[in-house]
Every structure is written in structure tokens, then in C-alpha cells.
Image 1 (cartoon, rainbow, N blue to C red):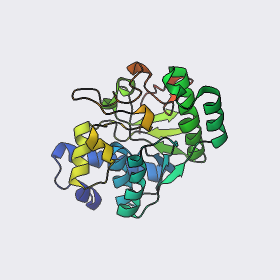
Image 2 (image 1 turned 30 degrees about the vertical axis):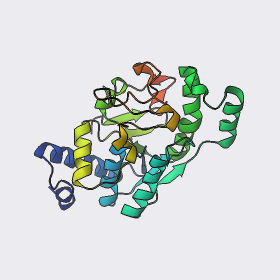
Image 3 (image 1 turned 180 degrees about the horizontal axis):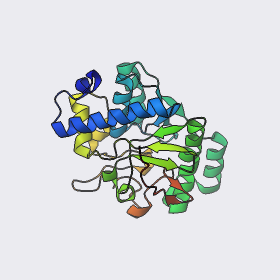
Image 4 (image 1 turned 60 degrees about the vertical axis):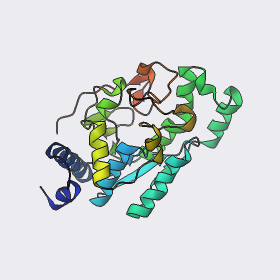
Length: 250
């Protein structure tokens, strides 16, 4: 165990310490072998774990987030918390204003409630297109996705080929449970979105996210009016279908 891993795993169980060590090793490999690489942070709990691991280790993996124009104030406050804690400015990518205005003019401000197609069209403008700009010029990108988050992520691999963007995609927390995430956050005093304390385990745009009830799936509050199998915004999909690519050998 190196000094950084030892520092990050103080007070953690042996099992979680092993997960942290494996995740740190993945991040170090990304920084070493896939530069330039970027981390797409949703500013949720999982992403704050990765933010802590990346910034404490001083890894050359740039961090950005998508400011859709419909985020909760509590979500945007995380950007300031990261600046205060780590002296690091997360880059924010906004949607094309003309595209947003055209969508709203033609369909209405909240047309995403009308159908899956309308919701995905909104996500396409506010998330997918800005993501493409954020990823341009990089060899790999990192996400905070976990298998346990939803049925659409049950087959998630730690390393994938993202054919849509022509690069390698990493999900270093794929093996982590919800409990693992929060144990790490509390043990390392990592800043996090205040909405998590108000029953929001998964947080997206304000009109598309609600608190969940005890026993509900962690992503039950995301696009709650849709079938669970459709609950992806398009960031991890190609041609309307969730990417299902087998793990790439290290």
C-alpha cells in the first residue's frame, strides 16, 4: 500500500480499503496511459469520491460538470465547495442557448414530461451536446456510475470502449455499493450535495428529480414518471440504446 492509499483508507474496513486501492490504481493508470483524460462529474456523492481521489493525489485528470440551466442551487453549491476545499475550479459546460430557446419555443418549457422522446430531446440539448464539447480532444473519460444504481447499469464494466465518442470510458466505482460511497465520504470528510440529506440519492435537473421513499431504488427519483428501463439521459447511450460493451482487458 502506498502512502496516498494509506492516507485515504484510514478508518475504513479492509474490504473498502481494497476497493479504494483498486480505484486509485485505475485512476493512476488512466492518468499515465490515457492522457489527456477528463472526469465528467454530476456533483453527486459518487462523483465527490472520485473528485477527492483525483485531487488529493494530484492526478492530471481534468474535472468538468454539465450546467444544464435547470440544476438545483444545492448542486451548483458543490462547485463552490470543491473550490473552497481543494482550491480547484470545476469547468462548467452549458448548453447551446439557441437550441434551448428553440426547444422551449416549439414544445414548452417542461415538454419532457410529455413523452420519453421529448425528455430525451431535452437531455440531448442540455447534456449530450455539451458533453461532446467537453470530451473533444481527450483520449478517455471517467464517470461515477455504479452497477447497483439501476437496472440500466447492471452490466457496467470498469473499462469500456465508447464508440460514440471514439475513446475509452472508465467507471472506476462500478463495484462500489451505496454504503461504500458514504463510508468513504464520512471517513474522509468529503463535501457533498446537501440534497442527499433530504432524500435525494440520485440528483439530476431540478424538475426531473424528486426525493425517494425508504426502500425505493436509488434512481427511483430520476424521471419518476417513466419506466425504469428508459431512465438514462443519453450521456451513456448510442442511438437511443444503452451502451453494453464488454470489459477491455487491462
